[in-house]
Each structure stands twice: as structure tokens, then as C-alpha cells.
Amino acid sequence: MTGFGDASGSSAHAHFHVEIRAVNNKYLKSSVRLPESIAALEPEFEQIIRATISRGSVVLTIACSEQGEHAALTINKDALRAYAKQIADSIGIDIKDVDTSSLVTLPGVLQQPGDEEERLASARETIKPLLMLAIEHMVAMREREGMALKSDLTNNLAFIRERLDKIQELAPSVSGDYEKRLKSRMEALLSEFDVQTEQADVIREVAIYAEKTDIAEEIVRLGEHLTHFQELLDSDDERPIGRTMDFVAQELLREANTISSKSPDATISKLIVEVKGAIDRIKEQVQNAE
Image 1 (tube, helix red, strand yellow):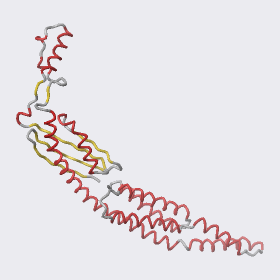
Image 2 (image 1 turned 30 degrees about the horizontal axis):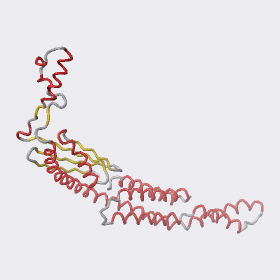
Image 3 (image 1 turned 90 degrees about the horizontal axis):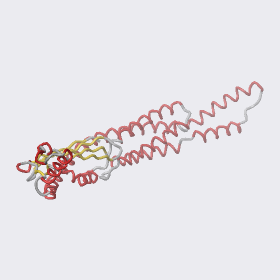
Image 4 (image 1 turned 90 degrees about the vertical axis):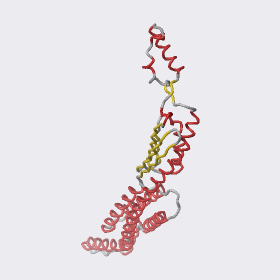
């Protein structure tokens, strides 16, 4: 499901703005975007995401603006001097003649002020509560979407159940209709030769046909899967159920395909096409469910 959450706050050194976004994905895929000054905290924030979210493409973005004297970077004099010496030696001039102002953008010359561990600890202490608050906002948005999704899935299940009940009513008459058609055709063919239809032959052919077209087991299993799916929707268990619903939807489609291939009845075929259409809608929707 899609969702968005954000939060802002400040430490003694900086102001932080946290944004987290999620879009549909069958699995959990996270991306963390941090300023270079706090990049070392990325594994910790990713771990928080994985501990609280189980499905979706999640992007966490944290913006940081240093405050007061901490906004000014310090110059690493040893690194600057080393760059200047390399340039002087390479072109054969005195190190004093090197324009050091052009070297400050080189890696390692400008550094964050103060102790690195102290700065990261301060950032961690400030950002973690902001991240949890942003996730809380995002989850609340996803829950609202989830209620609408539950309603849509429930309607599709009811639609399938209604069609399945009709199929169950029609299924017993399929063999009887075939028996009538078979008798009629055999009598028409054999009447030309003045030969009587053997009842045993008809019974044998009808039995073979009934065995091939029997869909009673598939109807029962499809009904059981519908019940299981509804139980998942109605469950108060807070564990993620999206993948389980995806699996049950595949089983629904498997039974519907079997019914479609086994039953020659035109009315049942029409009903099962409608059932498969509803299952496809369910399969598409459960990709959004966590």
C-alpha cells in the first residue's frame, strides 16, 4: 500500500527533517538517503524500517541543516598541505606558490567540526524518535487505505461465492443432460438398422463422462479457500497477511481453472469466467496488502 509520513526536530547541533514514503511492492525494498555528515547511521535506520514494515518499496529521506557555529566546516590542514606539496612537486614550483584556496573542495580537506562520535550520537538521539513518528504517520495512512482494500476484497469474495453456489446447483444435472443427448443420438443412428439401444452401453458411457466432468471436489476446495481468505481478512492478528492472501488467491485460481477445463456446460463455463475475473482482481489487490 502507499503511504507517507514526516517529522522534524532539532538537536544542539542541527535541524533534521525526516520523510518516509512507501509504494506497492510484493516484497520489502528499502532505500535510505542521508546527508554525508550522518551517512554512518544508514544501517541503523534501515534496521528500524525492516523491523516495522514488512512489504512495499520504502524510501527514507533525511535532510540536515547545521546550526550556529556547527554549520562551519573545519579545514584539515595536514590534508591541505599534502595536496599542495603533491602539486608543487609535480610541476616543479615552491609550495608557497600553490593557490591553496582552490584545493579546499578536494576530499578530506573540509571536515565536520567537533568529535565525530559525539556528533553522530547527537544525531542518532534526535533522528530515531522522528523516524518512528514518521513511520507512525505513514502506517496510519496505509491503514486507511487498507480498510478500503478490505471492503473491495470482501465484495469480490461475495461475488465469487454467489457464482460458486450457482455452479454447485448446476453441476449434478450435467451428466443427466449428457445421458439424454447420448440416448437420442444413439437411437437416431441405430433406428436405421432396426437395432435397439443397449442400456448397459449407455450407462457405461455416461459413467465415463461423469467421471471426467465431475467437479464436486473442486467446488468444495474452492469454497474452502474462499472461507480461508475471508478469515484472513477478518482476523485481528497484527502479523502481515499479504503474502498468505497472495498464496490463497493462487489456489482459488487453480481450482477455477480445473473447473473450467473439466466442465463442458455452457452456463457453468460462463459463470467460471466471471469467477476467474474476480480472482484476477483479488490477485491484483493483494499485492497492495501487507
